[in-house]
Length: 163
Image (cartoon, rainbow, N blue to C red):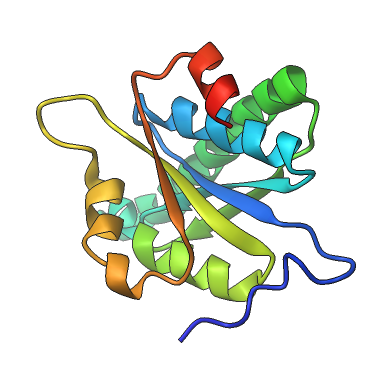
């Protein structure tokens, strides 16, 4: 069971959560979530999840790989945050977590009761909508908040008119 969302309570703002990764559709999710946050006086949360599987090589190399993954995560978040500031003029919250993406998304939603909507983008490739959309859509009945899935092919103008 999920905790009550606080985004409509006094002193709270509704937060739109989107996941930063290396998929081409990620940018569309950020564009939509940023525009929705701007249009509703909400806040944008950008989450980057570092998967621990990446570090299970040699013991001596693990620390260096973890530091490199953290630096890459922060660089990706900073790049998207800069785009959001320039395009819609809001300051996003940046979060880095380590673990399995779906588990870390759930934990963040539980930890931050102002997060009210998760925004993902579906890939346009023949391999399907993408692993994150597929894993969350498969858990739709037990997912704690509404999920908005943005088609990858939407232009900025189409996103502006929909958001």
